[in-house]
Length: 350
Image: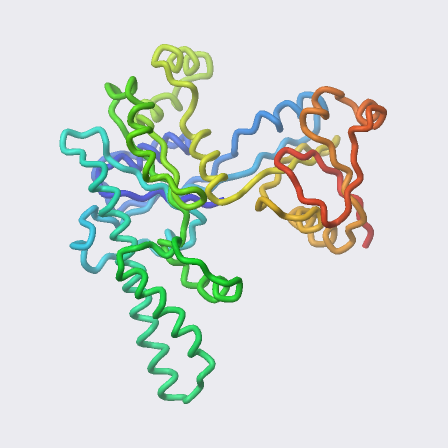
């Protein structure tokens, strides 16, 4: 999973990046600096299974964060912008909003930054419309007419100041548009970056801004980036004591990874054995055979069956013999829909 962190200059996005990635990048008005990090996704299920199995290796799912420049916070008045092209390659975007400074106006910042994404997609479409129209006129090849019509439909929607994620597309049209990597087709996690003195108001702020939440399109969370960045520099005992003192339930990075998983419709299944205990990230609703292909294409091609145990049963019963004796191991075929936390052994033959 790749998450792009964006926002206007001095909104605290590099602070959020440091908190999420345990990095120590310089914070401040360095709006042209990009930072990248890959972190392991905390997963207590992996930890607990590894404690039982004691494998040679433990592998967590990973998330890549990109802290990228390019947004001004000026909305429609931003004009021509140089958006970091890598932002378009992200699976979802984390929109960091200043709610800590004296001049903070979070509602306006949210609207302006979404407007900038809309404007960026408009410019991209207009450029491609011109090129494709010229090509059709010169060559007489009508093959691209449908794509041209589809882009025009998207442009009309954007001109109504609405993001493309609100549009419904057929599977074929979705594949056709995927290569453009439009910003407004990406799920958005809005992070209200508050000051320390607002910590007692977190629940109220969350309620006040919940109107920005749209299932599978937009999520919202409230956090103090400065405190979270300070927490990552502490050892575990100090961190827990500090969290308790501040009345914070846990590290914010865990919550926004969970929210990002939800936005993208992702879940994890687990595999385990003496060589390795590992979490695998897949789309919710995927079949057992397709999930096997995430591990290796040969396993998908030669799929025979999946031996599935629910995580809670695995932890409670502890050993394969006890699991089988209790009838908690199910044999599932290739059409079985994987559930979050399934512990699976794939049988295959190639």
